[in-house]
Length: 244
Ligand code: GLP
Image (cartoon, rainbow, N blue to C red; front, top):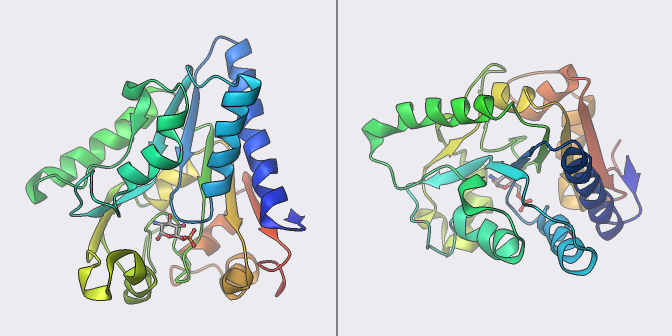
């Protein structure tokens, strides 16, 4: 769907998340959400906070799994996705702390493989992701699944693309400070979600959205794999959709 602007689009996504949470609440079930970081979902989270504060939306039955985290990364660092999620969402809602999962950027290298398997298992144990929200990087990455990622990939340690590190350089005060690696859910992990929403706003994203939606399905642009799923919806503003 294409919306007039990112504000309207963000509200629509937040409304869908809220209705999923309420539907699950009514059934006495948990809602399992896959969450993303970056600038794109910030207004969605702001709207969810508003719905919590002004309309009493409760997150007591919500379990979350974040897509990714830089590696290495301390949770209290300004660029940490743990901190991002706390500041932009979790600190302002009534979610139970033990229901929050963000990949751990502080692990020793040799502990990462087991940790990643356990992350997958935790998702499976709670019944799988009901809804995964995604942004998109200019390399076509979803999560941190850079070009070359396999369609069946699981949660793992990956090497960041040079363009991704350049795009992140402002947050880190220079590209040389951007970690070279990250822990990310895989394309396969994302695909198992029962519903996937990919959001993109602004002209800057128009070329990669064209490739992701209309381009040949290829590991060179990991987001093109989404064309293979029936459960994916692209939610765009007119600028991001302008090359379609
Ligand atoms: C980062 C995140 C992605 C995100 C992308 C786009 O690389 N790991 O999950 O989709 O950036 O970021 P933004 O939304 O700021 O454009």
